[in-house]
Image (cartoon, rainbow, N blue to C red; front, side, top):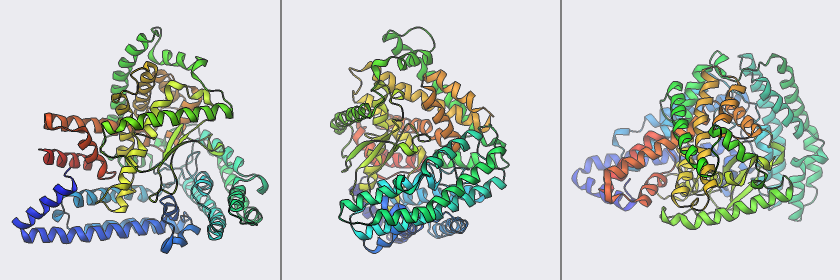
Length: 602
C-alpha cells in the first residue's frame, strides 16, 4: 500500500499524463466520499447506540442519546429497504474510475451491502449479536442481553439531560424487548426454533434480569450515577418506568420462550431448518469474507489442528508431560491448582491486576513491529455477572472516537478455575495489544479513510488479525522465559482450528452439541464448562467461529507473499501499517492492499 505522500505524488503524476482520466477519477472519488459520509450518518440515525459508543451523541446529534435501534417489524423492513437503496447508490459510482484508497473504500462497502442482502432476504433472526444469527433470542443475542450492559457502561451521565436521556432509553428498552419477542414468534412460525439448551439458558438469563425494581441494575445504574452528579429523584423515576414498561415486556418475552420450549429439539445445527443451508452459506461468506465451502473450512480445521498438535506434543514433552494425547496432557495442566487465582472477588481482583501488568509489558515491545500505536487507554474488566452464563470467555470493546472512555477487554470470571495463568496471556494479546484494541484503535486514528470505514468490522479480517497478534506476541519474545505460556498460545491456536471443525460439523454435518464438545476437549484439553459455553455460542451464531483461523491463515499468507516479493526491502512495520491504516476490510480487498504495498515498496 502506498503511504499518503506516495499516493498523492502518484496521483499528481497520473493527472499530468492523463488529465481527463485524472479529473474523472477525482470526480468519482469525491462522489464516493460524500456517499460514504452519508451512509455513516444514516447508520447513526438507524442505530443510535453506535453514536453513543463512538462518543458522537453530542451537538447536532445529541438527540440520538435518548433513542435505541428500532428492532420492530417496521424497523426491519426499513433496514431491508436501506440495503437495496445503498447498493443502487453505490452502483451509480463508476468503479472503473477509482483507484488507491477510493477503490478499497468502494469494494469494502459494496461487499458489506451485497453480503448482507441474502441474509436479509432469508428473513430469519437478526444482527444483534457477534454476527447475523438465525435466532433473535439466544444466550448471546437479543436486546435483553445487549441493552442493560450498554446503558450501564456506555451511556454516560454528566448532566440532567444525560440522565433524562437514560430514562427515555429505559422506556424504549421495553419496545426493543417486544420487538424481539414479535420477531421470535415470526421466526418460530418459519420453523427456526433454537435448540432446547439455548432456550433454557436464555430463559434463565431473562429471569435473572427480571427482578423487582429495587434490585434492578437498570434502576440502580442511573440512580447511583445521577446522585454522584448532584441529580436526585432519578431512581424513583427509573423504578416507575421499569415497573410500568420494562418488567412486563420481560415477562412477555419469558412467556413466549416458555411457550415454545416444548417444541424445541436437542439438535444443535441449523441444517434442520428449511433455509438452514442457505443461511449457513450466506453467513459463512459474510463472516469469513471468503467463498470457502463448509467442506473446505472443515478440512482446513482438521489439517491445522494436526499441525499445531504436533508442535504442542514437542513442547509438552519438554515440560515433562509425555503420557496421553495432547488434549489429555493439557487437561492435566488444568488440574494443577498452582496455576489458578482463588475463585473469590479478591482472586478476581488479583487476576485483573496481573493482566494490567502483562498489558504494560507487551505494550513496551510493540515499537519493534509498529510505527505507531493507538492513543487510547485499555482496561481489562470482568464480564458483568448478570450475563456471564451465556457470555464468551473473553471479548473486546474499543474506545469511542473521542477517547472519552477506555477500550475494554472483558474476561468471563464466573469461575477463575477456567483461567489458568498459562492461558491468560495469549487471550490478553488477542483481545488487547497487539490484537483487537490495536487494530481497531489504529483504524479509528487513520487519516484518509472515511469515518464509516474507521468503524467497520469484518470478522475474517479482525479475528484473523487478533490470532496473528497472538503470534506476534510470541515473535516479540513474550514467552522466552515462559514455556507454559507458549503452550497456552498454541493451545489457543488449536482451539481456533477446532472451531472450524465443530462449527461446520454441527451446522452442515449433523454433529450433536455433545459431539462438538467432546472433539474440542480432545484436542485442547479445555474445561468442560468453558467448552460447553463456547460450543453453545457457535450454535447461536452459526459460521462466525470459522472466521478466526481462516483470517489468521490469510494474514500469514499475505506476509509471506510480501516477504518473498520484497526480500531485503521487506519491513514488518511498513507491512503492518499498510494492512492496518486502511481500516478493516474483506480478505480479498486486503490482498489488493498488500499488492499496492509491495508495488510501492519496490
